[in-house]
Length: 325
Image (cartoon, rainbow, N blue to C red; front, side, top):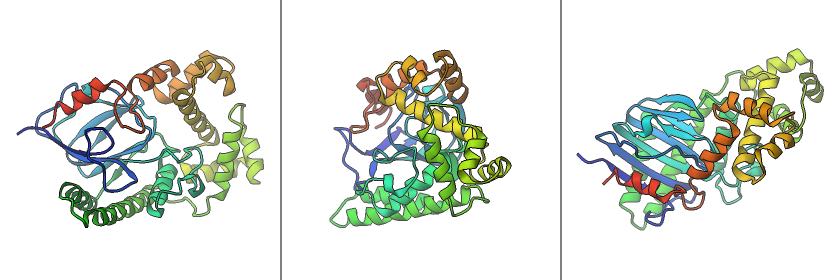
């Protein structure tokens, strides 16, 4: 049997999705490995991959990740994803991209999400931020048969569209989002409090002061608790120490600057308060397995455009499509 791909999106050759918040939606069925199908690439949106069968092995910013049947892989904006040996393995998976262009990745609050985005999508984006922004290794959640059933319904409406399909697809999409929100909530640290105002205050303070060193005592004074209490509360809420929390924020800012700015790596290093470009490079590689130069180079040559969802090198997109009927 031939490999098949059903895709709805924003390429010139795509049919549009039936739901505005869905940038891309589709399914791939591989009966033979698709070798050299897609080079390392990254997106400006959240990408969710639902494994129906087979095992998908990828690298996310250099970290090896294996995704098994009924598991969901969540790829964050600007993460570089590589398939092992650039090969898509045998198996079936659904894929979708959520529009995160208007979401400020530094502040996981509703105020930073586009007014055009519906409430359920807003909630899902916020939960994605809370669940994954503070743990770079925590990107797989266990899905359910109900999720797969909703994906099948959503795909059927796209494939067999009639005058009721847009409304039906919107209902299936929202039901899927609710299932994902529930799964994400279960997946989060049990000790996390519903009142996150204190950690949001810490987060905003850190983001405003990333150009200098921030001490644990400084953060504890901000919250009005002891340093030891701060360590305990952060560990319960985000499974990180204060310095790990600050370091992760610096990495997020560095990624954004490297992706969006034209400034030199040296200028970015000093802008972020590093004593030298060499120290910045060591710090960045420790957390991403890539130097700033390598990260920027891969992003510039392989980034899929946010508006068209086409690999910068159009031949790469054509190479992927060539593996499917």
